Length: 300
Ligand SMILES: Cc1cc2nc3c(=O)[nH]c(=O)nc-3n(C[C@H](O)[C@H](O)[C@H](O)COP(=O)(O)OP(=O)(O)OC[C@H]3O[C@@H](n4cnc5c(N)ncnc54)[C@H](O)[C@@H]3O)c2cc1C
Image (cartoon, rainbow, N blue to C red):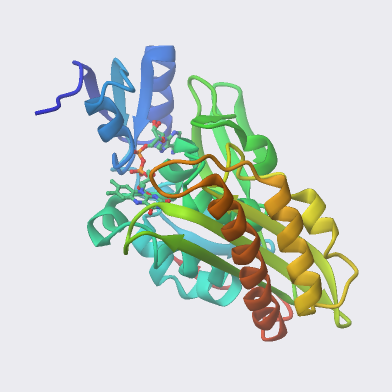
């Protein structure tokens, strides 16, 4: 049986309490949310934190609401709440697409968006989603509150901009009028990690693409940085040919490795094809998208 190395455990009573514990225990402390990534890593001794700060009682970090033209998601919001949220379904159906294919109900009942982003696994579906919609992370620490655009949040595989003594508390997603979004994933079996996956978001203005975002999962060390493909979309009409070309560029710019899930060549092919398909659905949804953000909706 695999057991983690010994550690001390504290259950935080408030966000301030969690921050105080993180500061007190320093570099050796780790937040635990759903535990679905951290605990397996501890059992395999790939992570050996000496102190765990449990944030599961911090219900103030479990919410979804629309505020100042952004959907704001508390870091402790579970996969299941994201899947069931009407607010997200209305503004960012890409989250629903992704949540339908993330793991299984036990994992979705417990795993959180904060844990998913902080894990920074290059195959993490929500990370690719947040890259596509250009989410902004709100990080709290001894130095106060700071906002970090998703492009700067990932420093590399399993590494983020959240420093020692800090916590991710919120994810903000700007609502763009006339925007649509979608996520497409190929997995070996239901609930498995992606062989490859693509998220796309775009807005349409006067029949042309005004803005576009792309995030890919499981096809390299980076979930972000598909700027060339995004730029190939802006100002163009949303046609099949334009989407195919953007997919081709995204496939060129990713860096998949051959492993048990497939060859690098196969994954590169999927990256292009799934980007094309996600863009196509995002454009269809953009046509039906709300024209303006309402600020009176609250969940969680
Ligand atoms: C069987 C199985 C299948 C899975 N399949 C998929 C899949 O198909 N697709 C997919 O994307 N994911 C999958 N996952 C991962 C799942 O989505 C996890 O829920 C997620 O990766 C981590 O969320 P968590 O809340 O459990 O994080 P935890 O395991 O608690 O934490 C993960 C990391 O984030 C840190 N952390 C957590 N919250 C914060 C915070 N607020 N501030 C700072 N640091 C924080 C922790 O210290 C740790 O380093 C799977 C997991 C399992 C067990």
